Image (tube, rainbow, N blue to C red; front, side):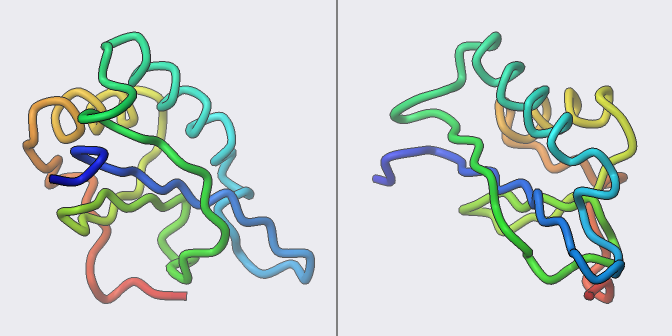
Length: 108
């Protein structure tokens, strides 16, 4: 068994050259909100959920982006309510939020 049931990586990358990046979409605020909700719901820690900062995940065109493992589901979101839905539906209940899944064709 894995140490965590699910692991969420949130891209916080900021590109200095002006190219699109997740930080342009206030990814830090989304990360902070997500981490807080996971703790509030008692999901954090061993056997539960870990929320981590990530550098570039190379899917910038869909930013902001995050990926949940072990399912390898990629998400993009618009606001805190989307983050809440990812936390409650996927991280807690194991149900993918289809409307927020990043299409496979979206890359850099």
